[in-house]
Image (cartoon, rainbow, N blue to C red; front, side, top):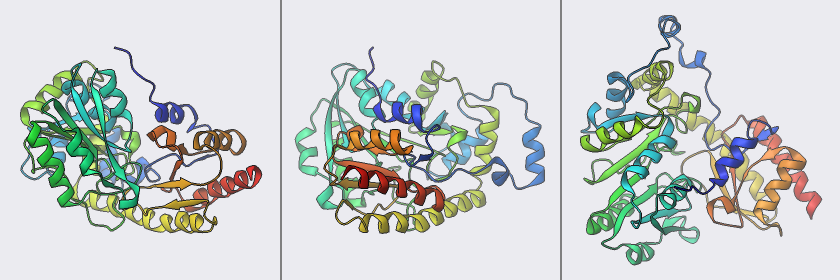
Length: 371
């Protein structure tokens, strides 16, 4: 199997810890361990952990905590993974054979795009339409669905647009999947990061052939724990655990413990409240900056996530602009080319405000220099 390069992650992995201002990140500023472990007894227990092999599919306690987020599920519906990225990898690996057809929402986090194609599937797009506030083009879905469709893959809330599917839109996607007997793979890692403060409707409990992937990176501000999960039927979760034996084996006991703390109901509420406070404080900074640029950018307000997806009118290709920005100003953002959408830029606004303003100021400097 030959894989195609995952352009955005290759760029981020190379530069995000080197540049002065990393505005390519799609989550909020991460917590420190000391902020998560505020109870002295928890700290004592944590520092007493032995760093051996933990339960490879997640401890029963962690899987129960995750299943509590999905009504009607149990720990046997859950496989813990190393981030949502591994959850998506395992699901696509398990589902895809050469010659399969897959329908995938675009724009999207492009990991699954590369994986499905590398596993030999024909991937057909389901585009979100900017003029409809990034709602899906259901005429395109109806044209793409066929008896050979194996999977419909969605990201909801969406990366990079911040759009959220309505209940009616979810129902249309489910009806299409059911008509073909296809699986739905729903990446829901941004659920909980809604600016409104109301957690959006997910796919769980509405369709029988469903895989939900998620994790603690985006809505919780805990990307360094590398804790994600698959929630599906008991049979699929058990198979995912077996595939997991070939990849990362399992999470570290330290991450498993900290994830259990994070998912305690009162702690979880506090983490999600923190995320929403950051988003609602910072998005107006980005929006005001966009509005002040005299038509150089436009944006549809995101409903979730710490990312703004800007349409740019700078007279230069987005990828070229991003490269110059990194080299000349040490600021990293994401070009629309990484979402197969030239003419757009993705800017993260989940950092502290001084950091965000500093990065935006340097973007202004580069624009002034090239115009």
